[in-house]
Length: 425
Image 1: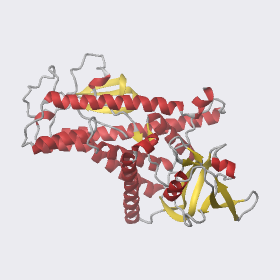
Image 2: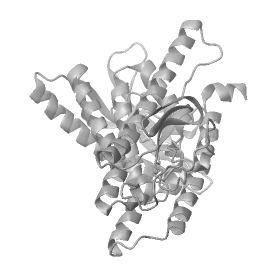
Image 3: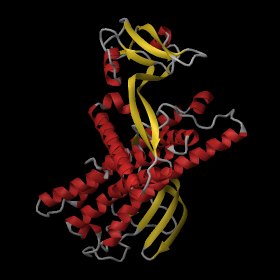
Image 4: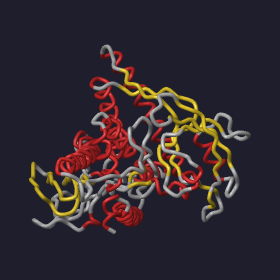
């Protein structure tokens, strides 16, 4: 989730950054359903380890910098959408900032102050609507709050539109340069990871195994079917048929195993594995621009559907999927892993984050673009009668506070989950 919100900027104090709550920051709390075929699962979070050799450490720093740069570029695109939409309609803008916290650099170009701030995980566009020192009269028709509903809808929705367009351009660039990954579904369910000491490990299940069948229950299993079956079978014997490659052998062999799921705190079964659809990925390279366009549209549609469906599943089953919501630390860790594994993967990493930003910001919640859009539409439904300013500011301020608290929680949680932090602790 990457919330964003547009509010009039406060009265600026010379050479001193205003307080944090005054601004319209992006607090990165990204629901990151890594859609296939991203090369790495979300659980793998390996940043530079203390014992790493110098070349490994340098590679880790470079990959983290690459992932952070991707996030900063995405925020820049989102805020540029708001800014350019406002400028195109002649609406007064007072501030454009990438990052939050102390300013590292700032300059003024015309009436707008541009700033680069210390923490490059957010940004904002400021409007002088409530700034008594701006020199604009309260009834100035070019203040954002005084513009007609269509103009305000355009400005608020432009950030989402910019990220959608940027995501498509990223996918199109991927198609032109490295090709688009195409998945071929194979039988069974892949087991990428088995937790040591888990029920699956005790039963002899190994990373790389493919679950082909659960006799009598799931002759052709899928990930959701297996998950539901395991949850419904605490402390019960569950026979499974797996395919694996024996050491030194080229061909896979069939192995019969029996797993007894452990009982979770909520009474459901769990076996301690990561499950993934079994598929083969190949890259298709276009022959010409027309082919590239077709491939890019197809891949963009697939990624968009995956992201929006992942968000829907998270909202419908939030109690079970809340741990999949990631903050900036986890996102950079995943992006760094992607960068170390394959530079090609950064294309889809960037596209997915863009799509997540667009999807989340469409939610009609305070502190999100969707919340602002909802208030504007409510005003239109009231026949143009504006919502009292104090009511609107109260709604948005409460939303900003909640988002800030969630952001802090996710940063702390994801930092503590990093491998090298766990080793230190």
